[in-house]
Image 1 (cartoon, helix red, strand yellow):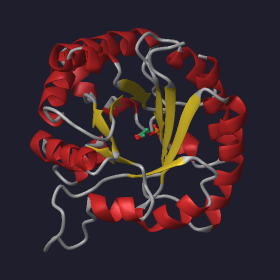
Image 2 (tube, helix red, strand yellow; image 1 turned 180 degrees about the vertical axis):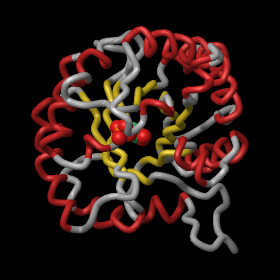
Image 3 (cartoon, helix red, strand yellow; image 1 turned 90 degrees about the vertical axis):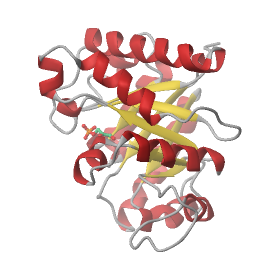
Image 4 (tube, rainbow, N blue to C red; image 1 turned 120 degrees about the vertical axis):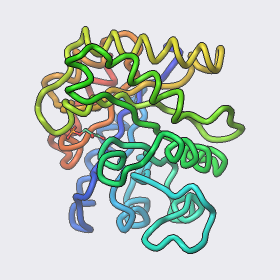
Length: 249
Ligand code: 13P
């Protein structure tokens, strides 16, 4: 019995439609058949409620949230709204939001805190740029980002960390098992250092060009507890083999 059950989450980003929710059926079937692995899909906000109805037991999540409960924040969505729509998880601090919306570690931390307080699974993303890796500061950058993005304590909800090197996202340039092993070990050490035994139970996902043909190798790395998958989560054909790889890892 592993300490941590594998988790595979699809991040649909700004993709998908009501028609595309038809993919959820075969994905849910595959997840049930594989067994031993938790599987989720994070569609855009507008698709959360219809996705929940068609989830077949998959965990449905959001891709972002606001840290405040309510108020004058045009275009934003609170954790209570996400929960009411039926979501069980929320991604916070994705590198695309950090880049496009200039989100800081402190803002990401506040979002994670709000999500956990609402009893949602908070999937906190961290990752270095290509330039940072080139100069060898990747471990330092990611551990600092992690330190600033994680709230100090939590009562409800579950914390998940996703390591997503920016240079590997949507590029086909997947991190090597050695890269992933080095970073996941550093993240695990930081989590245990900060949270004690509880840090050992936090799942650490790898994300960035995960596909059917590299998933098994990535999921076999120590301290890789599953994946956060973008492009390859949009169809059952692409996603199901990744779920199967996680179940076998
Ligand atoms: P890709 O799998 O498309 O590289 O995206 C990864 C990602 O950003 C998931 O959050």
